[in-house]
Amino acid sequence: MSQFQRVTFSAVILSTLLLGVLAADPGLEAEAQALKAFKNSIFNDPSSALLDWNDTNHHCNWSGIACDPLSGNVVSVSLVDKQLAGEISASLGNLTYLQVLDLTLNSFTGRIPPQLGSCSQLTN
Image (cartoon, rainbow, N blue to C red; front, side, top):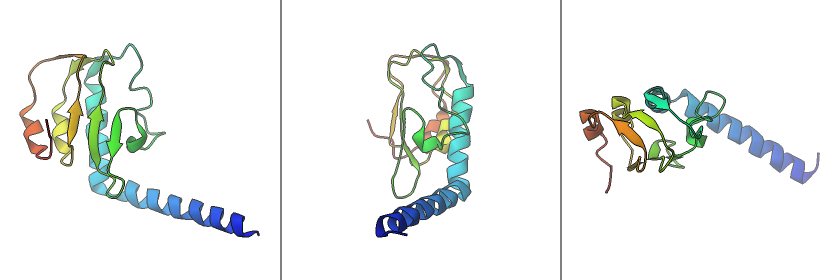
């Protein structure tokens, strides 16, 4: 095995272990569930903006989602001008490390959930 192959193999193993640790973290799983609940509150997604929001992809790789590279926590949900229609799910309040929530130029109805008050790191 060449030096390059050993390094590549080691990187693959390390990446696999890291993803396993992140996936096993109950807090991160709760964040994934919160995002899925938000997706379920959308009744119209004409541009398929949320198509990759599924179990095949880690939630940090979903369109419009950014996670902190060290902790893996969701820090941004940015779905600007995706023509989404629905309600803003109260479950987003479970994203306690959220700093950015940008849903500009979509068609959300209903009230802003008071649970978003739990997102104390949101900035404007």
